[in-house]
Image 1 (cartoon, rainbow, N blue to C red):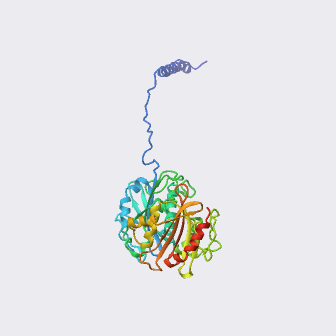
Image 2: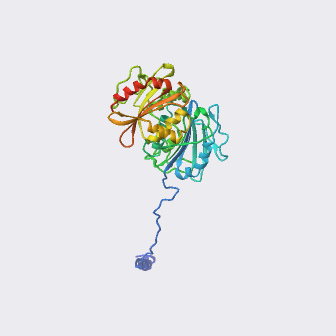
Image 3: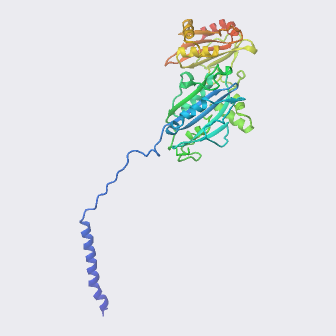
Length: 411
């Protein structure tokens, strides 16, 4: 016999189920409310990638070149550029080393790092910037040293190499500019901005990238370039630096090994095969480098002249004025530059119209430095520069040898 309690419950459960179903069906008949969202189309400033800006100064000392460099997000560097410029313009050196006691009070000395003389942390609302202070042994050719370093800094921010004078950097005045021993070479101010190809994620405040582990998106990119003031040097220089670090040698020693001051050895770079010439009798192999197509020494061993052949940019007047400044030890008068341009020897070199400038100091000292330079215009605002630098009497003795060399050149 069926349980009367169960049978009596069935109608009740059925009724409840029907009520629930009707409620659901009634709810489905109503339209759901529409919710509107505002989706931003512009990335927040804190996450947006910025251009990278580098500001730097290259200051000469007797045996070394000193580098002061800051690299970071453009807005961060913009906030301290005037302060940094004023700082480097007033740096004083003691025994060949910069006195850094006068840095702004809010700059904090950073931890010691390999290949640096000093580091400073500079806080900005956007990013903590890193100022690196370092030095390398001076090369014989100041222009070559400047161009090499400025162009590697340009590449670090995604810019192409520049063939203009000083690689598009500018000369600057600083507290040591009036010293006679540095009057022959200018201090250099560098200011470049670009977007590195390997910039990866944007930099966070404090300078750390979102992904900064070894091998991550920024490995070898902005972070490394900012940390290592000599990042991007040629392979032979990097290898020499690593060998010097392993042996405990100083950075200047590493630089000398990478770019030897002595005459070229059998392992040194050879003359550019695109350049053909007849070497004058008595001209010896000179010191080659990444910019030189050919290099020689001429005259007595103890007071020789150096001959170099390079391609570079720069306007005619600017180059002549710079050479005159090197010879005289100061900025030449416009009238003197005009006279030098008017007196230039016109000749044909490698089938092209060229101009030769022989610049002697006014004091007529036979041991004072003179310059014999020939400019051969090429395509795309480039020129071939054949320059001999040395004592005035050696330059005069090598006149015919230089003339025959120029006549034999083919490029």
